[in-house]
Image 1 (tube, rainbow, N blue to C red):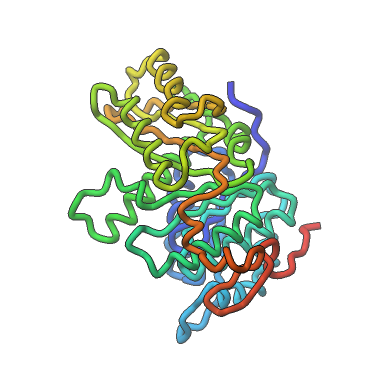
Image 2: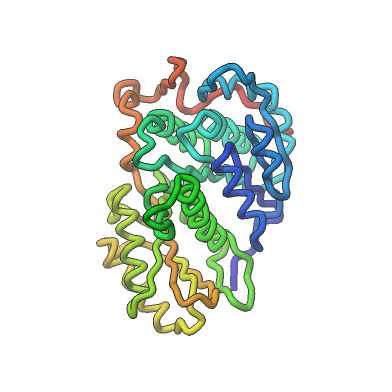
Length: 342
């Protein structure tokens, strides 16, 4: 039996990556009942699926930075508040590193928190080769963590299991988005005859911890596919942070209808050993998709530090202050003044 779910859950997609992920999520049967898209690009908004669209008007003859996008968005704060008013849970989903996602994700999370919603940031971090995006991504991730109740971090490089070796850039981005959506939709799935969802309350219980939550995904077709896929998911987490620091974990098994309860139990039972932490609190869900391939999604939380700390080296000097490309300083706890939704 799943947990009782609050009435209003909103997913907000910011910028190109956040918008694409939320658009794909809107086509799934989820516990999310409203979708909102925020972008500086009208074409991106026109391409979005069902939901409410908020355009941040921007000059076409200027290169945007996170600071400029925040400034342009000040006039849209009232519209953003109105789009999430009454929600009890808000997921703010954005790719960090670009101007729109980096500039608006912390702001929108702050507005959501001021409106009284439990706010979870979902941050998609740049690929390894996107080195020019690292600084903005690191600054924005720290600001997002300060503004939201919890943050789920998705490392793009760990999501490329389904991308062929000769993939184009668009293929790589699409593959990463599909992997992220597949796992997020499993975490937020409604109960059905073919699924045993973990329940939204348990997801929030794992995410709303000190530090960060990390999302690892892997698939396998081998004889011991459940154990192999879980081991690969743990390895992907270990590439971002020290896996044994996890204090909560959720395992989502998606695939073969012949997967037995015993196999599920043995797989989930091995997680503590794989993480090298026998005290980790583990929950699980199962989705029988009918595919011969088994996918394991692993959401682990409680990480105080990640590899992304090095994306923002200036933070080690400034402490609680952050600095972006426009050399504007701000306390990490607040950006622009926020008004409540009352």
